[in-house]
Amino acid sequence: MAQKENGKFVHTVLFWLKNPESKEDCLKFETSLKKFLNASNNISSMHLGTPASTNRPIIDRSYSYCLMVTFVSKEAHDLYQEEAAHKVFIKESENLWKKVLIYDSENILK
Image (tube, rainbow, N blue to C red; front, top):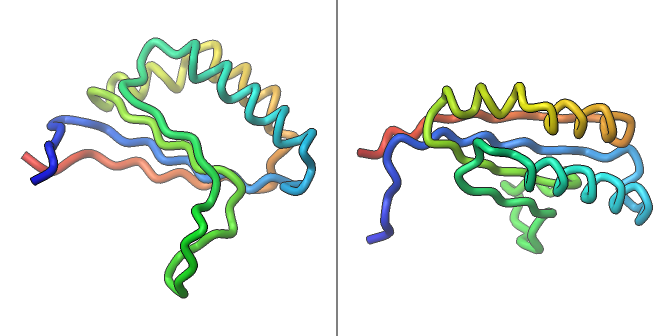
């Protein structure tokens, strides 16, 4: 059985870029986001990816990037939201995306 982590808060963010085929825009977005993630003091774990090559009718592959970050608590997530680096990332990158969708969840596995 897989090891379970108790008490984690997961913040999942899907980004749809305005010009996802633009290598320049993708590089700007990735550079800004990685700079922010590396500066954060509150993230427990992180994943940044693009749609996988899976292809079934139930899978949504319309987004450009998926960011998943975990925290030890909702309070740690709330601190992350207020980090200066987070605000810089938004300012640097918001002109690159056309849509952002966020899913926050709290672990119920004990």
